[in-house]
Image 1 (cartoon, helix red, strand yellow):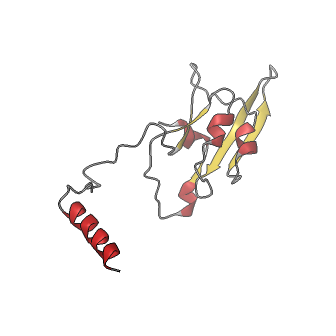
Image 2: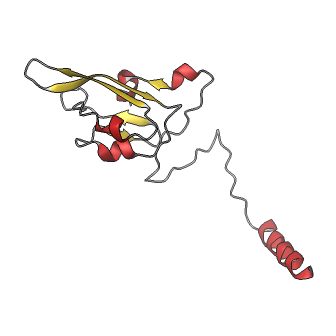
Length: 132
């Protein structure tokens, strides 16, 4: 009975004299890890258009089904995404969409400040995903 109490108190006293690891958030930002999965972003080609080839593999592998892609075929029989939408309120940030993309059109950035007061603000369309 006394041994667990002594172990707990010894741990408390060791931590009591160590430096705290708290950061002051608005002034100091958290440095995210290199493999951190934050907000999604679509990449651009050299000509400025979206790199997405509208294969819909990202929407297929998404376990929460939060990605919607509308495919259009161009005049030279080249497919491209007319509309690309992600519902971040449903997204679980698993990264499967990034791994499934054959051309590397979608990446996950280190941006983690995604809180909003309006649920409609979590609906990201193609223009919002293309901006940096």
